[in-house]
Every structure is written in structure tokens, then in C-alpha cells.
Image (cartoon, rainbow, N blue to C red):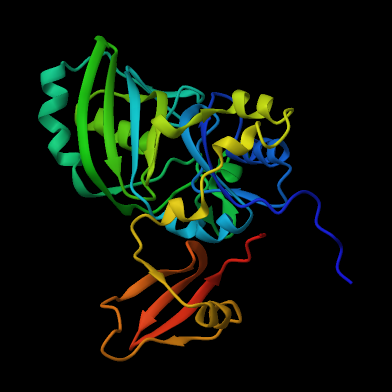
Length: 307
């Protein structure tokens, strides 16, 4: 007989407004304790020096994390001109200095180079793996880390403000895998000015926005209250992360087949016009993430939600 899991079988998404300081893993652990949940995970790391949207999945919602990792993200960040650092942010040691302080017009003039598909080299202090080891671990050990450039997509980029000659605030919308620290470093170089990120905030992650985000400390404080009036009021359904995926209602018999890992045929005159990923539901509840191919729903991730 297997060991009974600690905590409650709670499933859903929590949109955390992460503060400065904790790692993404720290946030996940605190949320899991606040909800007394059996299982939790996040959908995209935020550095300790970054703030903003960190979606945390509880229970069966962890099965939808891959869809969130691929989602478009938006950031607001501040560049500080005058110095490049080892980490491409304010935490690292200065490696290059420059007296250049570009004007707003000069910044706006080169932003088109950084829109669309671009090549960027991740920061040496990043989670990219090099021969099975994280790049930041090698960098912290004093090794020279060389990372290959990768293709990312910047959907939109704009200069928002220039508080003073040494700082510029920008906003971007981008694909997964984009490093804002690398972007700031490369914009600085394109302007002939050394630069690094001095402040970074994620403002959107897929369907999750700042409007829905709850500060971490507030959520944790609610964890001391009875669940009915505590953090549970901020729990979103697991299907919230699947807004871009078509849903299809199935019968009770077909739901049972999908839960057993069996395919369901939908051929005939009434077969839906669908393709690719489909969320199968029964009486409004998610049953499984499926792939619809050649008239058949094939389960990919089955949800075992507590009643």
C-alpha cells in the first residue's frame, strides 16, 4: 500500500505577484504550504531580483504547465547605462564601463532591430544547461561560460520613459526563452553604451495579468485562515491556463474511456471540426487534455479531480 500524500488534493492556478528577494521555488513552497496542497509547481522562472506575475499550479493543474511555459509573456524593465556586469543585472560585478548616455530618440531609433525574430546569447548566469550542468553554477565557480545564441521572438518593444540620462524604462511582449537581461545588454551595445537591467517586472504570462495577481505575503497571511474564507478564494480553475485550446463536451461513457487512457471515436456527420489539442469536458469539468487526429480523441493528460 502506497504512502499517503501529505496535504489536500487541491487543484487549480494561483497568480502570485512575486516580490523582490525569493526565488521562484521559494514562492512555490510557500504557496503549497498556504494552501496545504499535495503538489505544486510554477510555469516559468523569475529571478530573485525580478517581480511580478508568477503563475503557480496546484495538484492536477501541474499537468497544464507545459502550455503555460510556451505562452507569450510581457515585461517592463529599466536599463541602466554606463556599465555591463557579469550577470547583466545590478547584482553582478562591473566588467565594462562607458560614459555614453543615449537620448530617448537614439534608443527609439534602434528598437526596430530588436523586434521580430532575433538571435540572443543567454546570460552566463542563467539556468541554461552546459554539459548537464546549469550555466550559473559554472559561472559562480569562476569558469568561463560560453553559450550558443538562440532564436527568440520579440512581438513588441517600446520605450516607456527616461527618468534620467542614465536610465530608460522599456516594455516588451516576447516568446518563451527570451532573456530580458540579454536584451538590455545587446541594446546597450547597439547604442555604443554599456548597459544592464536595474529593475525587472513580468506584467503578463499567457492569460494571467497583474489585475488577477495577489501579493505573496497577502496569500501566505490568508493561509492562517480557514480555507473557505482564506487563500481558496484566489484559486483559479485548472482550465484557466488552456484559454487558447478548444473545449469539447463528451458523454459520461466517453469521459470514462478517456480517464482509462482509451481513445474516443467522433466520426460521422456530427463529428466536430477540430484538430490538434482539445480539452475534453464532462458536465463542465475537465476530463483530459487530448489530441484530435483522424476522428479520434486520444488522451494526453488525464485529470483526476477530487469531487
